[in-house]
Image 1 (cartoon, rainbow, N blue to C red):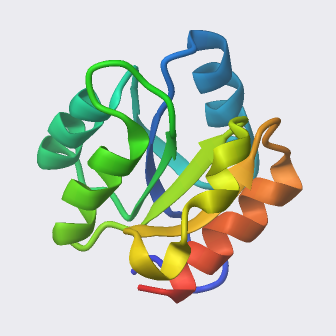
Image 2 (image 1 turned 45 degrees about the horizontal axis):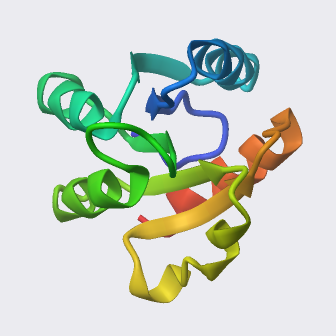
Length: 125
């Protein structure tokens, strides 16, 4: 099962920028994890998590249709931890203890930032 060191984690990601989705998916794959779905917004991500087995979501804060925080709240109710990625300065204002977000990554997301965030998120589950 996911959460153990070395296991492949099933990750769904959401970002409204196609290039960022592609690069994020590439980084996740390089870390040895499996991208089960890549969504353009929070609503699409939630839909994907209904039909795929997902251990963790990595999602952008600012997206059309449904933003990252709203999607993270819905997914938290299903027991799916969320890592919030944003270039927005206000991401620091997201108080982790009071939100469904287990950790956050400032853009640009690097492989090291993602590795650490995934590790933190899975320890919380």
